[in-house]
Image 1: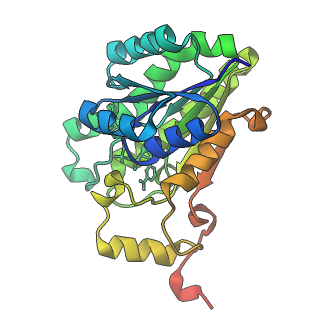
Image 2 (image 1 turned 180 degrees about the vertical axis):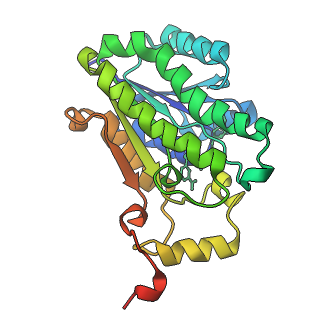
Image 3 (image 1 turned 120 degrees about the vertical axis):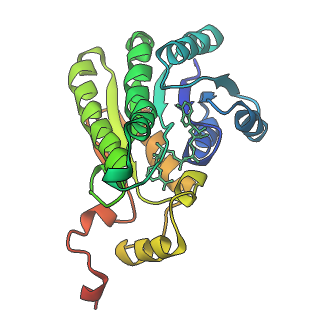
Length: 251
Ligand SMILES: NC(=O)c1ccc[n+]([C@@H]2O[C@H](COP(=O)([O-])OP(=O)(O)OC[C@H]3O[C@@H](n4cnc5c(N)ncnc54)[C@H](O)[C@@H]3O)[C@@H](O)[C@H]2O)c1
């Protein structure tokens, strides 16, 4: 049987690396893409056989499209594209200058649009899947996330657009919204106070793990989810469901 190929962006560490690992465990081949060549080389040692490494910047139309061509030259097919590469830059609205706003949008939103567009011909061939990583911050507004939260909310809508338009080619598009996970990205912006407050506000009372997010991603890319498209799935310990989730209202 032909082995399926997953292209995972931002695969050098964190959620992307865990996702690449799980795809390999489930018998897929993996194209691991990141713009950080050194980290990617280290990840390659962890991933071992079955994974090929591609250095590219998803926010650059030429770099991203070039990487898709390189992946096709190496593997001949793409069955799943996981748009996981993301950056976090939290700050008040008045201090978010245009350069900071654009830097967040360039990777988190433009990158998802560009990589998906470049992969469409290959995904038509395989009737493959797009899986976009947004965030709980795309579902719930919060202070300091004017750029990050808005970029992730746009990714949620972009996923629905992709599902609506690409379904006729058999291409599915879904979105996973992680709650907080202790990755380098999160730890750069989460103080101990923020960590404690998250624990209070999340029904499962803890952060998630990279592996728990990867399980949902790989499931949605797999045949087991063959009739699921256009869905936004929060993997967040129940954070999105809480509404008036005041710790003081707990019994
Ligand atoms: N960690 C969390 O708490 C959390 C919560 C919700 C959503 N997310 C989302 O999950 C995804 C992965 O986050 P993580 O926590 O694993 O982050 P991370 O910082 O640990 O890893 C992100 C990887 O993406 C790469 N990357 C960034 N910009 C890139 C670009 N333009 N081109 C190519 N590679 C690029 C980085 O080099 C890095 O290796 C992101 O989209 C993030 O917004 C994370």
